[in-house]
Length: 424
Image 1 (tube, rainbow, N blue to C red):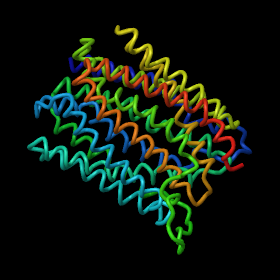
Image 2 (cartoon, rainbow, N blue to C red; image 1 turned 60 degrees about the vertical axis):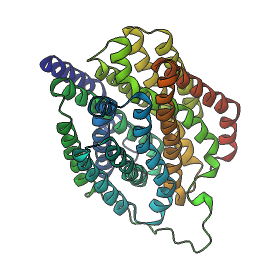
Image 3 (cartoon, rainbow, N blue to C red; image 1 turned 30 degrees about the vertical axis):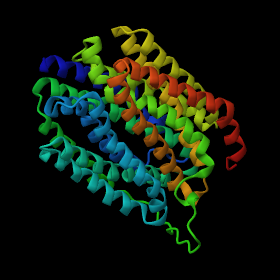
Image 4 (tube, rainbow, N blue to C red; image 1 turned 180 degrees about the vertical axis):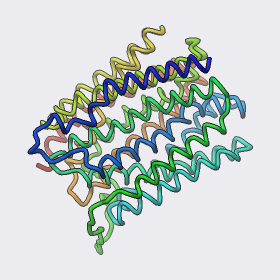
């Protein structure tokens, strides 16, 4: 079993390197008069972010299994316990935009990244479900602010002429981590069932990313010293509220999908070792969308990309629900990934285009906070719906409904609002 899983994983990675490796050499194929995109500092923050998400995704799909196997937790309890991480990340992100704009961004990044890494040690000592819930919930705080500061540092080190394109490529760090992290975690789980080993790997991976981020040369900038009374807009980009609602719909569905897919695969479809393949195809869709959509983003077609991505993702969830076979399972993974891979970078660019330079951190924290709200609600309600309203398939139906409502709102109102409020 271990050799088979390992061989499949190596084949997946080899395929990705052949298909997607050339993105790191795109400078050779572009006009030499353009500002360089893949600078040393941008590459460092890209890899650092990849390793942080790698550590995160290594354990994420295993935690529902861990709670069920170790603590005999039911579906509703699993949802409540795991949602604490997202809720805490949300709460800190409401402040993190202001913190990142107010204090030196690199210092904030390093301090919070180190704290994020340190919390993995707490998983060794979770002797009770309550203590695990406390550790997992608190772990969300450094994750929330680290993602905001890392995103903002990436924007700072990008040349303005390559910013929209760079944001799209930066998102690949999350996507590739999502492809590799769960796959490796699941291979280890099915081969050894050794949860402490997986926690140790997360610590090592996060430590490497932290060391790399300490070498980034971030441009000096004057922190924001405002003597006027603080307004709500210093913590939340109010002009982005309609885009935030759309993102909540997307992340509500995504939170249900990535949290409960491992248990659903085992209990409903009888797939015990193919969840890694699901995450691979989900990430392949995300990566493909970002690679094919970056040219469109560079040309300013952010609304078109977002609109197309939302519709494609809905199609993916529809396939997942209406074609409950192995074929539908894997096809839906790629289609959902492709849809979300077009939607998120376009929406992030929209948030950035709504904010002045001194509110980039606030804009970043707002979209991430919107994502966290949807994710948290999806995880909590997904567990409750699964427990009381017909199992996990009912939770995925709810995911489709909420995502559809967010998409309708975007088409009826959000698109027009952005065109009126964007900074030209």
